[in-house]
Image (cartoon, rainbow, N blue to C red; front, side):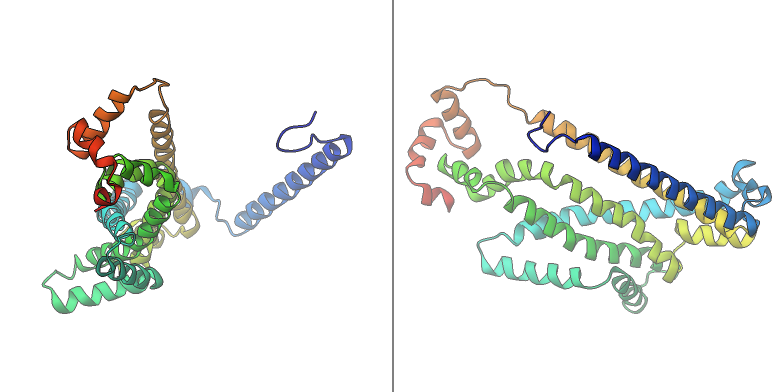
Length: 310
């Protein structure tokens, strides 16, 4: 049987795929055994090294939870600031006014080209020299500043690309019924682009969560990875501590992507048409409500598209 996407596999192709699958499983099993053997030879699988995570809550209450709390606090604050800032910069890059579009492009390209770690170090020096923020709080502020500046620039490009990916006829049709440009962006383009942009936005939010570890490695910010290093020094179980922290990062990021997938599906289902047929009066009423005018005024404005665009 032939599919519309590809030709059905023949007997030889099926045997070849089965062979490839078997070889891959054998190689994977050998790799897992090699890792297990290497850890066992170094006594890294001894129960004494893993016991703190399975008997008692001292490791979690003293090290893991405080570090995770700082990680989530820094990431959440950076997300709350970077998302709207990135949206504003992305929309500004699409402006018809040069005095708006050019400065927004300069800001986005500048901060997008600088490594986030450099921005964090710069932020730490800035807060140390020009503010009265205490030395204990400076790493937190520096981490959030670096994350916001870098990720807002990346999110601005995501927003701009998502809007430009929409068919040009969407904005032309909206302007034809009398909507101004800001109404077209707010009521027509952005609601449609959000669903398209959501996977890329979530990927960038995952990057924010992971990049908080840079602050712990360089700026002594007590986030999850820094707490794991302290915990490993106390218990003498570096491999076990890093493995547990790695699992926690996977759980946090997987929860974030799962929520985003659910939200994307809900948005897509909510945008499906009901199939209802609208009459001429219904269309006029909708256009008049959106444009802030009565149906008659909207109908008169349709003939002057250039004036409506202004």
